[in-house]
Amino acid sequence: MTDINILTAELPPPASGEQDRIRQAIELLFFAYRDFTSDPDLILARSGYGRAHHRIMHFVGAYPGINVAQLLAILNITKQSLGRVLKQLLRQGFVEQRPGKRDRRQRLLFLTDKGREFEQRLSAPQQVRVRRAFATAGPEAVAGYLRVLENLINESERKFILDAIKRG
Amino acid sequence: MTDINILTAELPPPASGEQDRIRQAIELLFFAYRDFTSDPDLILARSGYGRAHHRIMHFVGAYPGINVAQLLAILNITKQSLGRVLKQLLRQGFVEQRPGKRDRRQRLLFLTDKGREFEQRLSAPQQVRVRRAFATAGPEAVAGYLRVLENLINESERKFILDAIKRG
DNA sequence: ATGATATGTCAATATGACTGACATAAATAT
DNA sequence: ATATTTATGTCAGTCATATTGACATATCAT
Image 1 (spheres, rainbow over the protein chains, first blue to last red):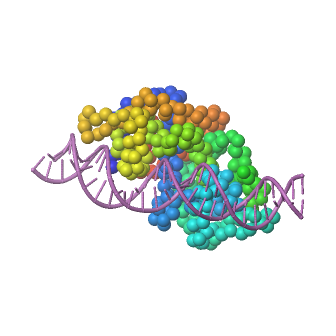
Image 2 (image 1 turned 90 degrees about the horizontal axis):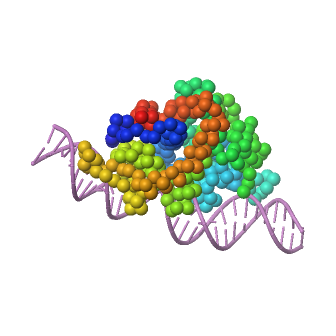
Image 3 (image 1 turned 30 degrees about the vertical axis):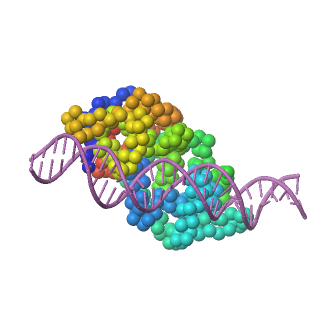
């Protein structure tokens, strides 16, 4: 594997200034997210599942009783895409459905014990990564980090998403 | 489309404390990245390309003369996956190859004028999003944001990546 | 000359996403 | 009561992105 540090030595410098500051920030987000998702991806690949399975289990685990429409809105995918993966999770006993009390058309989603256990295994290394990064960067950096992330979210949904995340 | 704010009103509160703080941070990163990538994705979909095309053009544009091995290391994908997309970009005249001077086995990659123009169109809305988020959050928040992102990167590659990004 | 490296390419496969169409059951509106 | 809308599920077909394994070629390094 070629060491990517070779870039530093061999390549011409990029445009500098404001434009370059933004480029650096964009690349940093790319690399951070790349590694952030690699933790569960590794476990998932060995188990025969994909990132979609983790995303669903994460949100079902974090918001027990979430309905399908809400999950679709969060994941920004189509019903068909969700359906295929969700069906697998139901069949394998990671997720279960219960009809809504007020609206019996709804199929509210919950993790089973088995699902909760698997979700924890998937999330654990990711949580460790975040905890470590936070500890190293310090509380002020964390506050800034969260503030910028909030502002990267589409303004039209920002309020809703933040309410959902922080509720309770 | 069901408003996801319904979550706030209808769902039980999650576990609180440290565990929940980390969950919130993880979800925030998920949503921010989701929207961050949606800008170019929209343009790409209309043009018949995918996110992979943008990633390649971004890094070829930012590091003109990058070689294939470096690009593979950055993107963390296989040669075959890169090959398929890169071949398209070469055929369509967005990227060009030139043999390396010192090592003529290498095919150094460059954007053509056409490629640079397309890459700019893809990146522009993303850059605007980041600039706005930075302006709103303020310089201290930005510093913290960058510090945390750095610490999310795999420690084994962190130094190399930061050198590469910030070189010049 | 030999072996290692940089790149490219073939075949087969899997995952995750899409569009469009249609079906059912339950809630809601007239 | 009937009609419409909503929540969900499902079928068929397609596409983009990724994988592994094998192999070929050109060039560099010893």
